[in-house]
Length: 559
Image 1 (cartoon, rainbow, N blue to C red):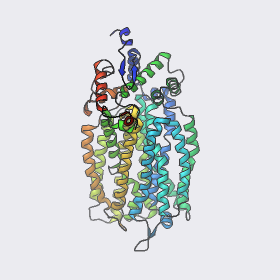
Image 2 (cartoon, rainbow, N blue to C red):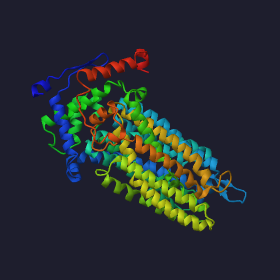
Image 3 (spheres, rainbow, N blue to C red):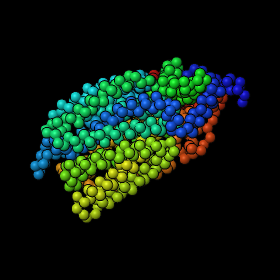
Image 4 (cartoon, rainbow, N blue to C red):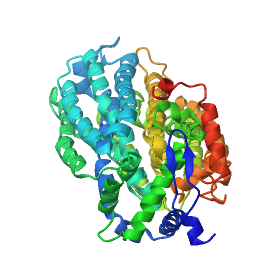
């Protein structure tokens, strides 16, 4: 096709969206440029887009607070100062908090997170990432007061619910923002950084808890909560200074603002007038392709057409991340203490288990540009499953519990390292890349909501399986058998249904999903970005879209 013919491509017309006329020459040039960027060295890539990397990494630090909270909640139950304040005597006269209340307190946070997640799906699409981020940071500062001044387990439950709402906002907002402000070749690194922040938070929680063991009275549990206020003002300022997502601006028709945002996200003079025009044309083209299936960015659209498959993949990725056995590491202190370790030694081992968070995620980030997402997920799930089998066997041998505890602690260190090198960071990358850009916030919210439901299940099961007092089941290390079985199921699903998204632009992924390419062929299948946006291809998709929605009234579409 000659250049003149390309530039006069047939307009795309459909009743709901008006007329869109793609500039094929510009779009092809931008797509070729994106493909070339995928071949750049990591150093050159970050040199070109260091502002995008900086803003993404700084805003993701909000997840450090969430990681700290999860680490504090689950391991406070092994701290004497916390038990003396909120617990009650068991049959032997020792202070404890029942497994039921442990689960309830943890799930208060999860229920609040679900509220925050659902709110974010609407708020981020309507107001953009910056405004929602700053509002959530203000509410976070206010809700920490409720934790700091709690006097009983009932107040702890309510306080964790309130804190969970802004944490739910941060969980998906940061991932979507990281995926949208950087080029395709950088997405893996920056979405994996989100996991690094979460892991850093859990590690900091173990350090703070270990240091607080020497504090007298209520300071032992109040100081760890109070330290979370340190993050509020700096992160609010960063949110204020950060540029808005250019994808959000394109979806809102604010093309000039999107251009300004793109220029702020790259080094000075990176974009020429021609390359900027091409980038914006490709973004608009991608948005128009997705309008065919999802207008208005509502939750219902996540289950229409190819978005249904994408939503299912994202939900399963989150399920695998939470239901694989690594969650036992979050209960390491109380698990090891119940196995016979002294309080101080159990917290020391807990620090060792969580210390690999940064190392493991760092290794994953280095490998992210070379190793596929499917590979990370498949081998990560398989290795963790094998380690859970080892933990279960250790819990079944007839030796002293204290000796079993040391063996289990070593297995948990390896488990956590494996998780942070594979399932942990790669989930954020898969979630950020698999979702359609037009309903990205909603899809990530739904997936994360499924994760939180899984977390509720885990926080109901783990305290009962791992504890030996009160209403617990006293499974101990035998809980590893349960997670081994789940990991076997996950490995099979990953092999057959998880597509490889590495080095694919959003437009290419849209094409592959719309063509219903099998998961194992995503790497090799050829892509024609204009097959679905000109002539019969577009018309067929549009006809299908209207046929699927023929029975809906205008009021239902706006629901």
